[in-house]
Image 1 (cartoon, helix red, strand yellow):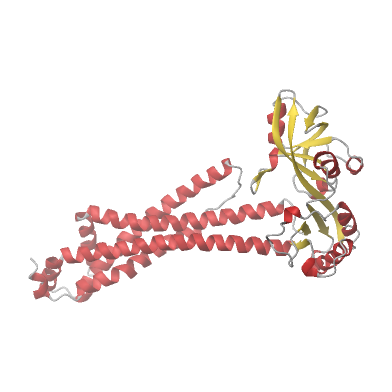
Image 2 (cartoon, helix red, strand yellow):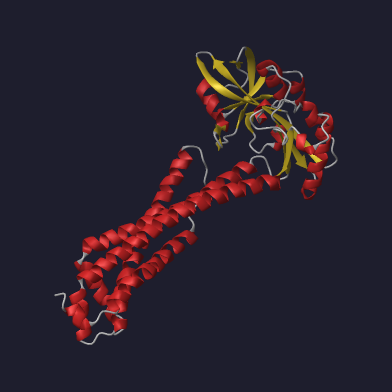
Length: 409
């Protein structure tokens, strides 16, 4: 009973000062809610990036144009580098550790079918891309290598653009217009969702040479995806590929390379740095929220001690020890922060579900992002905050002399 007495007294004090207790709880629950939401959304962001990487596989080299290290950023950007070509891809494909590759070139044009038209992104790729790229043709067929080399005007539609242009009509075999040219629809991609800022279901997949020559009137490409036979040799293969393309471009100085070869591990390392930086920033914001809540607790508890000086003096006069008074106020702070933490966990979890639904509606698949660790940390942190920020007011109350305290009546 002696152990429970401070807790009972603290509970009664909280019941008497409901508004003050509510404000204390509010300050903590906002901080804990922020921690829960930040941890869950950070995990969701990481899940989303990983899912985007899986669309391309995990054993490839990504080869793209880049500004040479020796060039100033103000003089050029990767979009203005037009030296990466289909021949580079073909030569890279001859490397003994490259099992297959495909080439990409993005474009844009207005797509039209009867009275429906839409500005569409064109995903030009070589035929091998349909075997290597994870999303597949749901029905119909992909285009062939022969169709790519002959500049065939064939198209595979994403789910959304198929619906926008053809509605409920079966588009297979139908003629549509892309830019100034007529194309025949030969396939429909399975649903893909969002990839960064791009809706992949709003894409039209066409042969890469067709995009180059007919749509864009150019010879360069945007990227080469080269898949490895032995992923353990990724770094050595990347070095060989740099040499191959460097020779093609007649560049011997690596600092002057107008292209970049990245392994999957390097790409994942960059992704980890991005997610780590985002999570660190969000956790710092959540920590500040919790700190503000803790300062609010200390202030409110300090006011509580000042208002209850006579009560403290009376209890001491009747035999309460410094330890009794200390634990009375500490229990009050811990109880309030525990309640605030519990409510914060509940609200943070509910907001996570809402965020998951909103992200899914926007086309971002965050997967399961409810983190039990975050829930436990939220409650534990709230109690720790109660102890840390409640100790000073509690010690102040415990160290009061009974005579001095009773004079405040």
